[in-house]
Image 1 (spheres, rainbow, N blue to C red):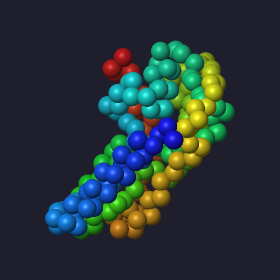
Image 2: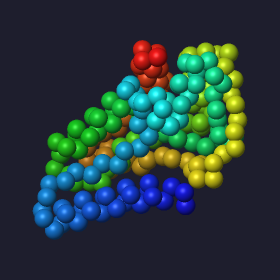
Image 3: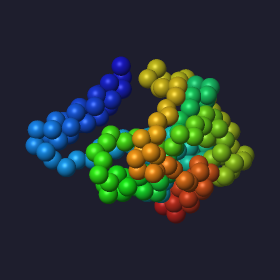
Image 4: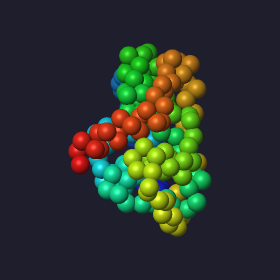
Length: 170
């Protein structure tokens, strides 16, 4: 599919790390990062949160692809860093998934950002790209049981911090 090089690139890198681990007894740690957001995101990185925030801060309607019912889960950067530090300080190799298990419909995310920034903004629906997955939700059971890690920052709190960052750079 269209995303094959992205998906296969991650699988290839992980495979190479584990090959070196086995062949050369190197100390490695493998963490899989899922949909992370927060301050210092690049305004034009193409991710949904930064796209929505930039559109809202520039008084543009929010572009939602498809009907907006596809779901994502979003992990605030501080939570991700906490998990990676726990992994680095542990005896475990991994792989460990780091992400938030709370799912939100894209349309819910858009409305949340609109309500925080400018409730007068509207939603603008466009055709859903063929490669857009309908659901993304990490399984973090291993990180929770072995590293005693789970995200603690809820989406709205993280969005407010991220929005304030974007306001400062605009």
